Length: 194
Image (cartoon, rainbow, N blue to C red; front, side):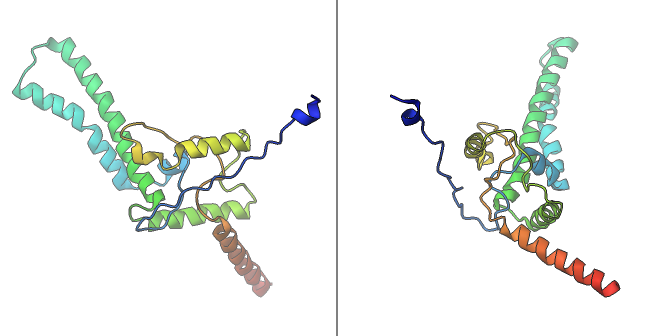
């Protein structure tokens, strides 16, 4: 067999994101972890900090009402462990509250406005909407399929999107249209002032 006949083309079908019905508009079905943290509200931080304090707080409460008598050194290690568990759980709660707004499962008007502003600014600067990636398009698709809507199962498997890719389940034309409108307004304003 010749090498030309065994060579296959690397054309892979695009698998679109499944549309999930929600009460609010979808912003992104697979947001990068940096965007999720950046878009978080103060209430998300408060909920995360409150949840982080539950585990060590319960340990202190239990020690008060039912002392373990492990001594000073033993109780300190218990508090460190419960503190670490609390911080982990607090972060997961904080992250999930923020990402559910991207999915449109909770009220998200503030995030819609922030998303539009961020993406329109990127369009005006001629930057890629979702950042640069060193991965091949195929591997970007694999990453997208593995982490899309992953926060719905975050209580079992914490899985975050660390990959920049262009498969986010939304029509990006709205960003380009808004950028065109804003550039036209800016152009007209310059003509008026000149």
